[in-house]
Image 1 (cartoon, rainbow, N blue to C red):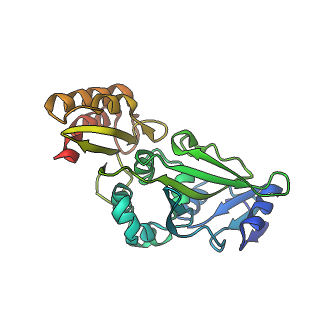
Image 2 (tube, rainbow, N blue to C red):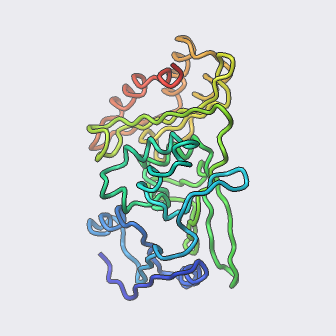
Length: 284
């Protein structure tokens, strides 16, 4: 682990952005991933360690402007306990319910889970289904600048994102799901929680007159990043969820996912699980 020369705990976004602009900063929030990765040498801490937990305005969950806005410092426990999440973002709540242990849920933040950019990140699959965007803040020219990036474009590879060194992820914007939208999160591993997923699947749609519309499908642990499944979505969109449609969706899923072999499972096993975890369960 690298030597830390300075510890900083800003209380405002402006102060944090100024520290980031100076460079050589490791951002720290819950630390449930960062501390482990730094101890095993996967991450080298930079000279400045910045704890962002005290920054005002980066906590909380609210509905505003046709979107549900979640502060990046919101913990998994807070998401689980939120009535707004329970009522409107059930698929995200289901993922949080499978997230590690109570102790880790109390510390782990949504922003941290996103920035960790694991292909197996539990919250990333439902957030893709929900068409989430991340809000990034920086101070390139002495004043605060913001940019929003669709989550589907945010991941660049295992552990890598499009966040620039001087940027801080401050908020997650989730467009209000349409009326009648229902989603389901499926995670398979050795244990339902306290384990990294072998595969993860998120499914969402509106059932209208017996047919599916606004279908959204996302996968985790089957590619270098969490991904949307456009071929699977096309196989389900506008169709009744009968046996033929489900079979077509399974074939599409096999075509657009390419699982790897690692210590948790072989690529073959992951592919087999994809065919077993059929999406018809969501529609019955």
